Image (cartoon, rainbow, N blue to C red; front, side):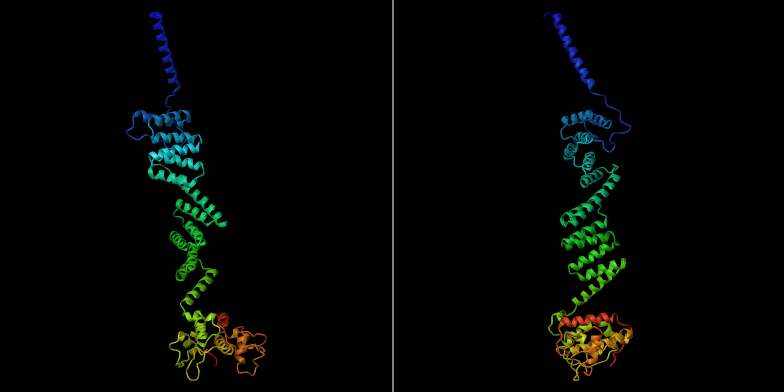
Length: 462
């Protein structure tokens, strides 16, 4: 080949190379201007940190402008070049995540944002992007966590409205799911859902109350009590939290604490149900404080005079106190466990001591003895409420084994007429021993007839 021909070939090759380079340059569009209305306003610009080389910083800006202009292909090229030129570069990885997010490729987006956060755990743009991807996947609790982390990492971001709405959504969804779990008896799932809701809204007292209810159903009384108290701390006017705490403490055996909780609920919202609960609990507390001998009366095959005095002293204490006391000398009951009750029953004239001034507390009670004691209590009640006594005083039942001429008939007739004692097959059985269960039932019926004691003292009619 001649020298001129070789020169011609070289010039032609150079022209081809220049043309190819020009063609490539033509395929790279110029950086678009910053958009007036960004395509994705919720995205946060993953700016390069100070100190990086200008080319890297410009590449991030170019990629971001392409992205906000809707040119995802060129945005991906710019951010991808940044990832290839500088591995583990969180801003470029975040940019790639936003491109995937714009394409609704959520798994890929989460992968890119996760890579960025491995490089910089507190990188706010990646945290916001991750939150957006999780939100699109309906993974609300995780999305909320990501947005809250972004707000903590960069307080200048205006994430408060989004976080507030998301918290409400998380609470609503978790509470609804927890209640469904309770309905099907899945207590573990219910607790987990309530705990997630509390993490989203830790100042909502009702969430602690509902969690406590689930824990109580699951037998976790200590945890339930703590969460009821937290609910009350956040909302002192939550009646259901007070009653829930009361029921929990009652179940755990803390009767005094339960009483205080029920009283707090009653002070906020009185109700017949609470009245009944308080009355029953006070009775249980009083019974728990009684001597063990008293608590064993119900199991006795035959009650004694001391047992009967104790039953009267506990269940009809106010009525005994309302009578005019009659001083009596007793010589044999001072050291007995029922001594205070014996003294009250004797001074009220309900149980008489023997002529030798002994009480003989261990003597068994017969049905005739019980009828006489009940008759005296009915006389005491009649002094305060004569109209109520008309029914039992006008009654003259026919009793096969207690004729009207019998000395015990008036007392038996009055006890039977008032419905406190009954007859079996037409007979009363004066000499039959009285069991503990029978004595308790009779005193309970008598207490129901008596009602509240009067304020002014009354006397037993001899």
